Image 1 (cartoon, rainbow, N blue to C red):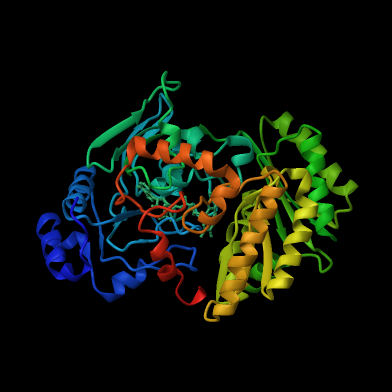
Image 2 (cartoon, protein in one colour):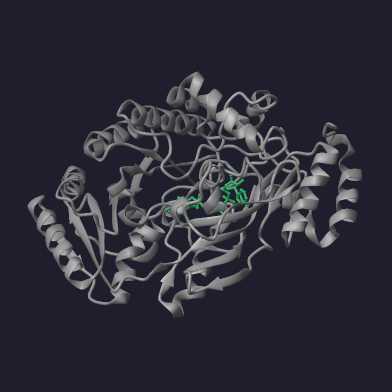
Length: 481
Ligand SMILES: Cc1cc2nc3c(=O)[nH]c(=O)nc-3n(C[C@H](O)[C@H](O)[C@H](O)COP(=O)(O)OP(=O)(O)OC[C@H]3O[C@@H](n4cnc5c(N)ncnc54)[C@H](O)[C@@H]3O)c2cc1C
């Protein structure tokens, strides 16, 4: 394979434009800067150029061009990823699906639809709302994040607790593999025999090929939905309520928690008011048949009261329900009011360990000398501690990176996992061996080789110690290292 020579940049770009058309190539300093990271802003690396394919064949042309010239490439949807998955770690091309947003076919009889991978999550549900259906995976970024990004990260969301993560809602994908071949994996009918390669692609973080189209399942909208926002004087009261609800055998559609840091941010951003003594909020939603919802809400509100809730605010109509969701859906964005930068961590622990873990997170933030707020899928034990800090100060950046590692290490110590939904990307490479051991990583590397032997397709992600990545890492981290 030829090796990418950055000094021949100009000639490469001319060739790329000739092959793809200049309207599909963005180059120049502002394009490079705009695509040098995703929503994980600690690591940065500029691409040579950004390409904007419109179809599967365009993507194939790009991948084949990259193979011919030894140019690395990184798939990208909306760039809302939180672990650096879209970082063009070795430069090369960012392959953006910005122009691949079409819904190609809707099959209401079989409750599924086919969309291009750049289609925004929320648009899928909007397209079938008239038929009382929706696409169930609902990451809080769903108004901008794309189907391809959701597939690559196996995204979850507030309603994952009851409805499952993306892999449970994808039937079939078309992708361009790292050899430049167009392949389809899966089927419009469920439960295929043989090895389940679809589950490898979903959650593969874009390291196994570029997904261009996917058939996804559609879920009927619930007949009845009830939502309550409960406030608590202590974080421990809220986490105990979560443990009690699950222990009683009730699985709400959503069971989300936010702490005082998030309340402060959304109060500043949207003027929302919470009881002055509240240290934690639980947002609980029950859905389904009316009698089931009534019984679940009885249980939920009883347990909130038993754990000392200060206030129970039950939505009386859809407008009120959406207002109650504001803190959860817009909480991370609102943190821009607290500091110039945030880093959102993502780890999983057994739910019973929530009180201990939240105490530990507060201690880590104190030691690091930066702010912390928590907003997370409490029902799944999927934590999102958000550090807020000033990324212009390298000491603060280093403290945040080290603090994040401490939190993830603690998740592992408590029997949990490195990621519930944001993936490994480049952020968590160093902890992969701790979680899987050397042998576990060998199996993962073997699995990757089924689709991708080449170092060109989204290099330096998920698996640590990839050739040519280690020496480049110092460069991505810049001043922070
Ligand atoms: C405010 C906020 C809230 C969030 N809430 C949630 C949440 O509730 N749940 C959750 O799971 N995540 C959440 N996220 C993280 C993020 O939104 C998800 O991971 C999302 O699925 C990423 O989609 P994207 O289109 O932005 O992908 P990108 O960030 O562009 O890419 C993410 C990864 O997918 C790969 N990729 C993108 N497109 C393709 C493709 N077509 N083929 C192959 N690989 C591809 C990229 O290479 C990268 O590795 C949140 C992020 C933000 C900023």
